[in-house]
Image (cartoon, rainbow, N blue to C red):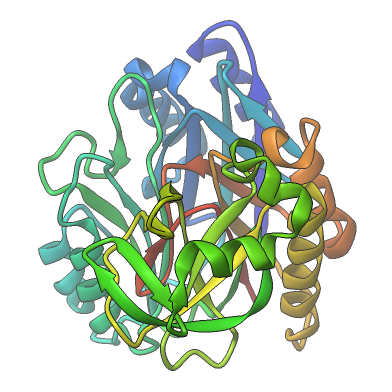
Length: 365
């Protein structure tokens, strides 16, 4: 059983009461609550959780803050709002953690069972987050974690860590809580993958022994090649993930170009011999990729999902899909009214790495 509530309002008490009114009388069997609030409510995060604990009887809560949050078919951005999802999970099947060390100790809280997977929230100020995500994934049975980096203009909160120095928090699950997950890149590859044949730090000099800028212009097409300012918001670097059997790739910004020498600068370190491709990001390609991802995930399940979590990039939502609620409406149209909760992140976590511009959908089955 998964129960969803979401609301907007003038202040934290009004929003909290609205959500409580939607779930009263249904929370008795719940054992875990997910909570995501917009950063307008950040100063009252503790007050909100205490009210939810008192009124629902659910003591275990996990969540964070975002400039925007999302629920089934709806998005709240830059306004006071919150989404709550209650889950009835087996006793001893989950364990909250407020640091990487605490996550490693979760086995004792899972009745001796191994950690199957974990939902994790990271602080944007945590410079070791990438390494910690990799370490956390390594201690799970599946090698898989999912989540997002908090986004806030008034300080990141990772519950239950709150403002702890660890910079990572979340909830670990045993195999009694199966999760199925996929990600949408928000981009579509253009052309075939290339090989980096000369580079210097984040500067790509040649691809397939041809000037990198020349290759980029050939693949972009004449229209975008004539307007590089327009291209900068649509064309990105795609770095295929080695060993992936799902065509995964990391999307990175193109930081600059050198017309005279035919060079391009990428928002990541390059190495000779690695795969490299160009991707286009616009509303049409983002919709196509999101529909593909959700459909594949739905069709992979043996039975309908009970609930889910969705972590999407701040650069998606209305700014990418053209209107408010469109991204979540696409998901609902394919999944149906499955309870979903999540937030707009500063970076998305899937498998064992950090992504950007992606949407990470995970379903409880």
